[in-house]
Length: 621
Image 1 (cartoon, rainbow, N blue to C red):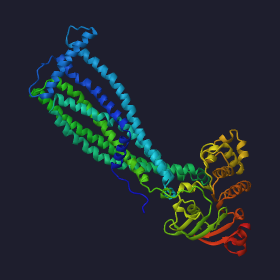
Image 2: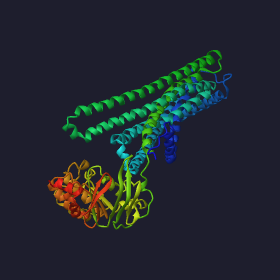
Image 3: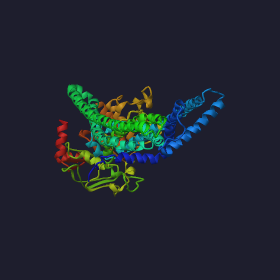
Image 4: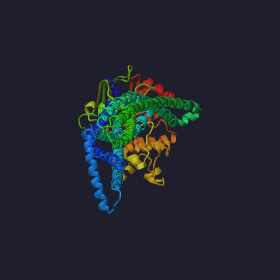
């Protein structure tokens, strides 16, 4: 079974996500298109006024020139209508001009101002709606990515670097958000602007449409070819950024070790090397974007030159159109390249998004943890646990080899033995972080794989060697053991964990913030808070993973008392290196190379004079 499926390297994943967002937020998209069309209308409408304005200024003929077709006839009708509209507007305003053409000039100015006011409103809504739409797409993606991280099995995180995953959530999605914001600014409005320009060209000089259509492949071919390079190089650039983030993560999380072993230069050199790689790959992406813009510009200018020659011919030689028509065309032709340029830039940023999405899709294609799916409900749990012939392998070498163990409800079982013997793996299987490849784990007589995982975990609690606290208040950290716990329950758990007096002595009491990973507390205080979290959960099965191994004698005594309170009446599984802490365990299991080599109570194992006795004597000495 493969852990991941290779994501599609092309634009299809991006297209699928964009289409899904369009369907999901179709109301927003409809408004965006509506205001985009209105913006194009109010932006291009004043350009149409150039024809009647130039006609009045030049005193051109009112007749339709030969060969100009239906579009020119409509243009003459529009000019005639506009002259009447201008005269009525001047009369309504009570303004009289000796020169009748000034009525048209005044009307052109008033219409331009009106279009400007209405256009400003449409621009506001287009900018606001389009950017909000872009942010919603990326926000949905971030939520999907966060949920997928939570659904992944623990083995996934053991194979990935933390900096790389953080980079996926932050850098890659930030690239996508920036790209979508820039793209939605232009990808809706500018095509509509080009359509409006083409409509004006078709209106006044229909034959010019063929030249403009011939310009499309001249601009599209380099745009597509270089765009694919932008996408590939964006992926490599973001991969290098992830490596740079990981290098910085190593510096920050290991700063004490870095300083203690004078590794500042080594870590700095690694960070700078990753940064250089990022710069080189980004430079390659920028070169591809630059080539695309340059080639698109050449294609546009070539077509523009042909169009200018054609217009000169029909005005000076063929004389089929008046100069006022050419004047109308100059403005849309001059602005078309700016629209094409913005669409080109939008295409590039979308290709960058495709490159960023490729790394995100790789994670989203990772196989989720199937243990959380299905299973029988478990409303109550006694705590009887049995392991029957359990085998487990991480890669090729078995870590557990036929483990058989039977535990009655309320008993304490301690796992001891040399490192690599299989203690932590056994706890992971009992917690169902993994499932055995062979054999069974039975809970109250039912195979653990057949029990609904959420129900089973609701009856368990864990206290680890390295306590983890969230950067919030003491109250919330304890209450995570039982969401909705009352203040009385939280305080009772803190008393049982021998931490209440310390909390009460703080200026803010239970509202004291513990800091990042509990940085405001000592190791013993952190451990007792995690024990309080487990106590308030009131589990039936408890897992203690070397919970006192990193503490000094004074803290160990306080924590051990709290653990004794926690274990009372519960089925408990304990990993311990200090054998003195598990002498009262009901069953002590000695694991070595994935097998149980000894099993019994503390006194029984000492009497056997075997492996456990040798370990005990070594620690006593």
